[in-house]
Image (cartoon, rainbow, N blue to C red; front, side, top):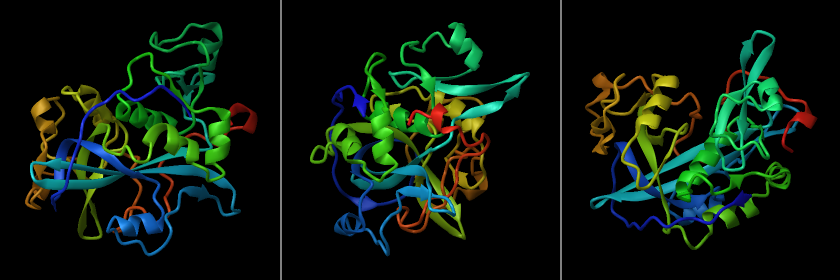
Length: 302
């Protein structure tokens, strides 16, 4: 992966496990761990986690990025997992007239939906995009890059993008370069990322979860973009605390979840959450992206 160096954030520790809602600044404890690595961290694992998504014919259609997060709130330990996916499909909107918009991504990891004709003519609606190297993004690619940029505390001109070689390796199950360039084993507590914690309700049980459509840098104090993302991705099976239609930074305050708040549950959640078992890494991922279709191989970045 082509990625600029991390910019430092700070450090963490241990404590008791409770559930929380609101924004927390967490470390990446592990990335795509094996069954043995999960068990070494004290997590139940009945089978090897699945990181390659396949169709009924065994063809690899996507890859999963599972980041195990850890941090503290006072003496309490916070643990959760962000599951992100990149599909072998382009991110395409519904047609507007004779043309669809595609999600384009530049070498700095910034994205925008644009008409191909506008890209070809240089008449982009997003003036923040770098024209050089601009290409169509795969489904889920923008969320993975956003997480990486926030985790590494990147600035506007720090490069962060996947190459064709990166895609070829990852879709063959090889995440070595990503792990080496981004996570850097042995330096798990050098950097943090701010995530929105939530409670996922499934089959009468409640699980600690993370909103996976937008992230922030560890030092961020304004969550307006996160709020806008929530408004665009409503779902009823997640509780985020008192987040309403009107943005208020106090709504994103980190709070212990006591199980008493279901009556006031927020309807805002990410349509990109995958259904997970008790161990969120044990089950194979489900299709979390809707819309669009399979892209021609020569139109994909790999």
